[in-house]
Image 1 (spheres, helix red, strand yellow):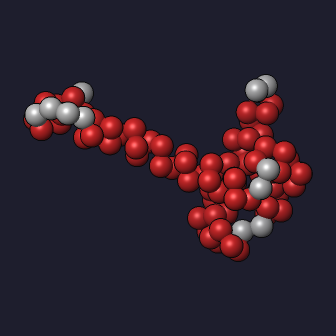
Image 2 (image 1 turned 135 degrees about the vertical axis):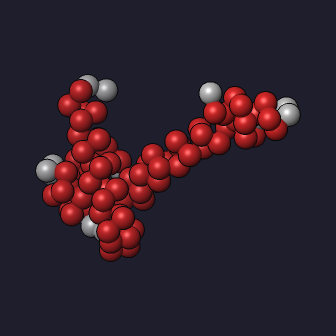
Length: 88
């Protein structure tokens, strides 16, 4: 993906995160997301195909770091070893 595409996608994701947080999924309009991102509305659909897909990506961007942080706690082994590995 080119740097312009990456930048546009990131602008849309940031704007969508704010809009979904402020208004919720149902009340958020893709036109509001596009306006906040400073891009034309068709760009939202170009990168994400639907509001639902965009919402899913926003949620994944929030959940992924949490899941990565919890990975050591799913490991096999002694609790003190698992906790030590997590802290490192």
